[in-house]
Length: 349
Image 1 (cartoon, rainbow, N blue to C red):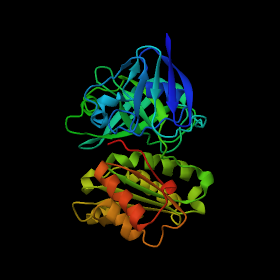
Image 2 (cartoon, rainbow, N blue to C red; image 1 turned 45 degrees about the horizontal axis):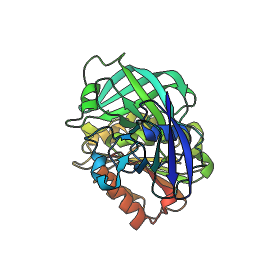
Image 3 (cartoon, helix red, strand yellow; image 1 turned 120 degrees about the horizontal axis):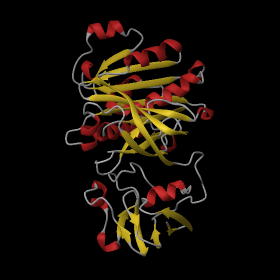
Image 4 (cartoon, one colour; image 1 turned 60 degrees about the horizontal axis):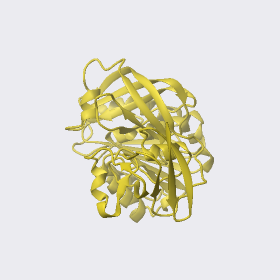
């Protein structure tokens, strides 16, 4: 059974057919609407809308983003709410309702094919899908596990078209129920539901600009996807790529072998710097990865110092914990003076 949702904005209206029990945001995105969102999991509050008529099930009561909603205005989170029947909603601001993305998101089912600990609190896993999916380098999906309330947003580490295999990396968070689920023994073979691809922090080779990637912790995932596509297309043969990866200590670092191999392919075009915030780089690590750069300090500060004078004709990608992302964005705006169109990130936290 489907229900009709009239989506009204300042610059027009659009009718969406929602499946029974489907989240309103997902129904709109499937239809090609460019609705506002960032995390798509109830955290950020970006996908705010108001009820004009009909009845809405508000969904997850503990969603952090609900703290930004005004009950007296009947505001709700589109990524959590479901239509109980035909209804009309109002989405603030002007929305480009007729601008469909090249790849529409959709629902997929899959199972964890393999999993491995990369550090004491970071796990990598591969999701094998029942049907192929396309995505842009830098995008993410929302994953749902049976018995765990709500979905979680994770960026793909790999890049491929029409693929049934998606790679992810997740850092364990205290009290994170989905993380606890992933870090249990014997997760290989367990099923996951997926909606995507999502996100606008995407890499497009045709833009022809130099690339700056700033990633903290598991936020390096989307950066790995971007670098993977760029290397596959020999992008750094005649353009520059700069990757800055921030972790606390050497024992928290991962993907160094993969990053080192990418630099070896394009030694003149690609530069990777590992920033350790809590210690000096160990000599044995520096010696082992001779074609990587190492530094001490917060990753946004290290980026600022080492990128001085190199910000012209560049597009920057940022991913990581909220404080790190905020610091990087301030640096890119105030110091690098990059325009907003050349700064790309998706706000998960």
